[in-house]
Length: 258
Picture 1 (cartoon, rainbow, N blue to C red):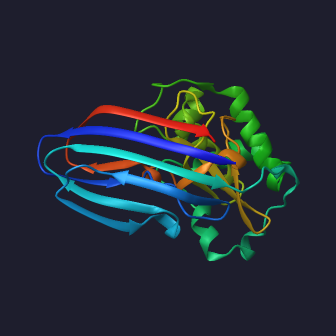
Picture 2: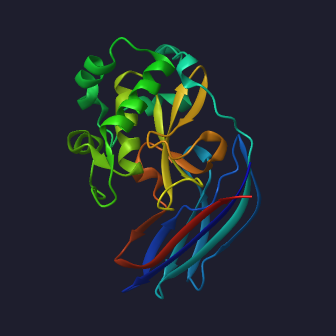
Picture 3: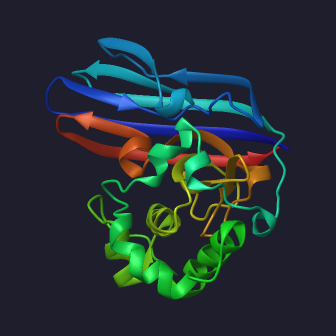
């Protein structure tokens, strides 16, 4: 599967502002970036750094004239869709270092507050079967509602409200998985069936010795997903983080199959 990606962002600033950007598709297992271009317009400073877990790239810019970003890429996806329900969980004491940090609660995923609920709702299930049941439960119980949540909304807030967007669905699944001692991390990505088209958020869970993608919104599949980056929750994978006041003027994202 080949995907064509395009993202255009335009922000105004009131003073010199530092901005951390993460929009480029990553070179990682299951996908290859065949071509790409990132145009940041006129910025006073630019440098590249590695993203979380060295998966993907972030770009620092400093600008007094606003930000006009245009990104396009062609990515080949070779990962396949798999049935997570057949995969076993790894014993906690055998987890590798790259998975252990994703057992812990985080800013938007306070998994310790999900322990009782996870035990009551999914107590008899283990491994991939448990993750599949959690994802299906979220899809059945929640309403996908743009504007229903904000930048401070946590997984616990969403569990109570039962509505949100991809970010919120992912946070709840991550918190539930960690509450059942299954490492889970958030994934920023592009996918063609996301409606309305935008940057998307999914989840990777550690099962049977590796990371596996799952989307509780059911709008994306592993075989049609171009990963940007990963992290503990939305704080780690934001496509743009500003250190100063900025105003969004324009944003479009387009993902198409080739």
